[in-house]
Length: 174
Image (cartoon, rainbow, N blue to C red; front, side, top):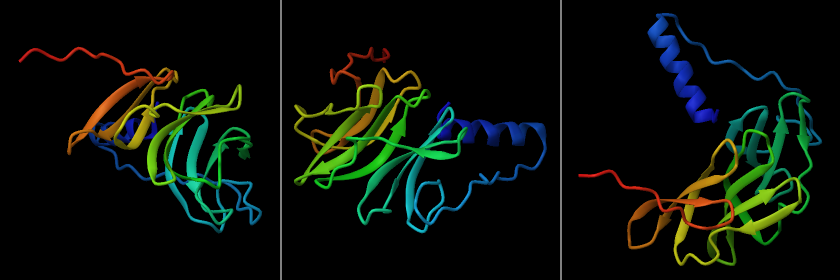
């Protein structure tokens, strides 16, 4: 379950049960070397799915994506994901932690990038789309990616499969 969905579910449950809801603090160790969830650097855009938290951090003096395993309480190596040539934003992770999707900017052009941890492959799934893109989200099973695209002077939500093909979703009758 995605963090935003989980947070909404917890808020609804707290309100409907009549009890006060207090935020839970993740009690993770601080590591000045940057191998934990907490570090001296700014951590932004966190998203949680299953036992994984994905976020952007400036630990290496640039915006890189980090993956944290709540079960082992350690960051997970993601070789081939981060690049000096890409500014990364708004990451999301599949529930099993295999797929990470994020908005990236390379040489002034935005794209939605998908990283497969199993085969260590990074791909731009919107390479053929002539639009500015942002705010991707990936389904728990990692098969579907939704994101915003500015195609015709307005922001629309597009849905692609992880191969980078747009999905033809039915529209409700009017």
